[in-house]
Image (tube, rainbow, N blue to C red; front, side, top):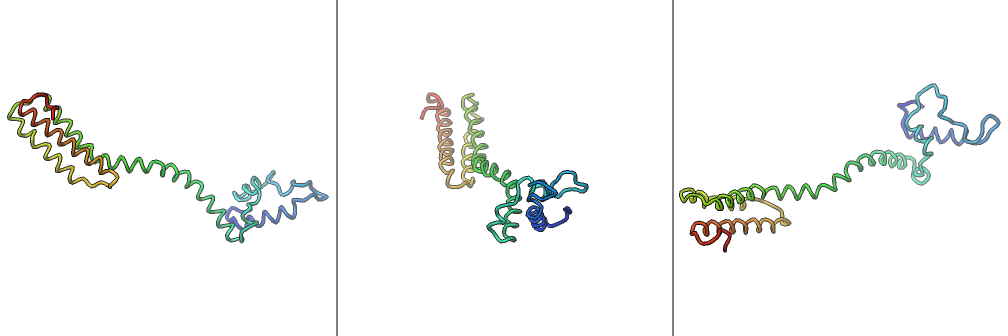
Length: 180
């Protein structure tokens, strides 16, 4: 069969040749003809598939045009499914990471403030340190996240308040910076 022949037409020719030549005759045994062996010209992909798997059941139950369409669509959807199914599996992880990554900068800022509190900074540097939780809270208030991540946003705000308390305790010199 020629390579540029439409696959539906190739299927019809292959089916007709198997019906006509597939039975036992005085020249051949059953299943001996048509054959892919000893061909002088290239065999089309449709013919090779027909010889390996036989005819599709779709052609027995659907109109010819519908069976051809479904057969071709299946060949297209299988490779797409191999790509799409794993992609669908990682989409929730990407969504969660994207929303949580908005908080990471503020948590780094809070950690830096806590380090400086425990280092017992000089009083002149404390004024700058006291403004940092306010700037962090302003940045947090500008963050837009979905409702599913509001709890994490409120936890971050509570952590900002904890750092403020640590700052005020450290400034007053009352006990450890972690006391309420």
